[in-house]
Image (cartoon, helix red, strand yellow):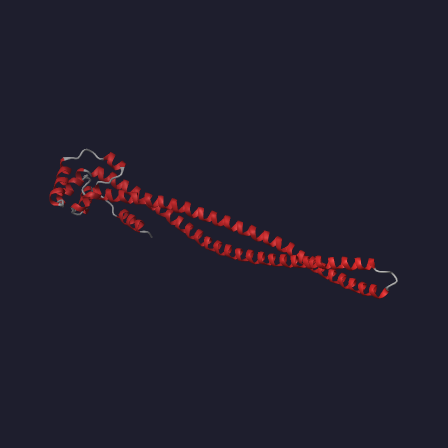
Length: 270
């Protein structure tokens, strides 16, 4: 239970059953309390009649002595019984409104706690997604480097094969020893080229898969970043609303204190 709710409920328990008892319940008011009494709600100010002679006496005694005699407060309370009843009703309405405001503030506080917890989870998920993206991109770069190196090796072997084929074409068909050696070399080159082409096919398949993984990881990062932005915007909006409600609640509490002060002075205004 908030401090406001406790004070509100305590005030609601105290009932003013008659002008005499209401006046008897008022304590001697110190001068330091006078400044607080200047702040009243527009409704109560509009309902205040012209200050009577007894209220002039209350104000004068409070200014001169810093306190007001109890019998004078009782007399003021009897004279201002209707006004005190109106002030009491206004205070009750303000207390109810204050409790409603406090309930809304408490609800927003819970919503903010949930959003902040969600924000922590989103931040952790985003960090994991970035790590995953970095890992996949590193694998992607490594496979791309391997493909580049194999493509260079393949180009060199293909060049050697062309040279061997050119030598074979230039040989005299009647000279067989040289042709046999070149044919052997050509077969070896073909085998190496075939092996590299097979590796390249495998690596290119891996690279295609990694490209898909990188795209998916990037989309996941963007999605989480959008969720985090929405979460932060919601927190900012709710925080602003709660601050406005807290300001309104403080205003209500000030009005209640001002009304309590007027009741304590028998309905008179300082």
